[in-house]
Length: 264
Image (cartoon, rainbow, N blue to C red):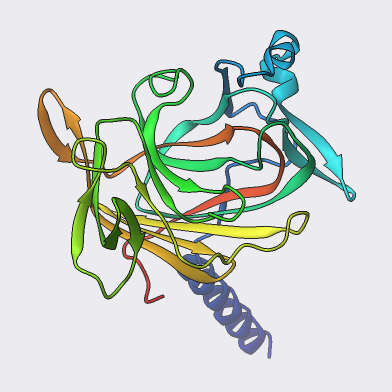
């Protein structure tokens, strides 16, 4: 009997180990306590709001506060700024949960920047060069190239010089070097201001997919940047959250390594 129980216990342990090996855990990029694994950088003032910049510090623009009984990242949005991970990532599924606050300095604008490279302050005197998953109210999930060195491909329609994502359209190369830094969306999947949104980015190799509240809103490929005078693949880098005009709360930032982008 003891032998049977021992064998049964070993079987259960083996099954639990097998399950844990198959389930890759999320890495909590925001640890729920502090911003020790992030770097803070402040840029210039917004026009007409120089008084806010005069009193802004990295620690009051980017902080951790308590909201609804849990600790969250608070971004004041009162001045241009970047909150950048100290760690770089490639081949991953990233997910953040965020919502707008009440204070609107210029507009409810922010971005989740990925594949960030080079120094802080290089782009718009604030950010690292990168690809932006736009979080701006009404435009959540759009693409914007932060930096003039980045190019990527996407299926887009061109209407009067403005590019709109369309999965049935031909592929165009987008970037400051070619034609436009921005790819717009036609229909927003964002929740109303004040409600939580879940934004996901899938990045594998030179491809990325933006998902807003469970809806795919953007797919890109052939992401590259200029290095030593040549365009080379851009497949990873640091993450950045922007301070860009609107008060923002971020409940979680987490990331999981992946080998391929799943069917979405």
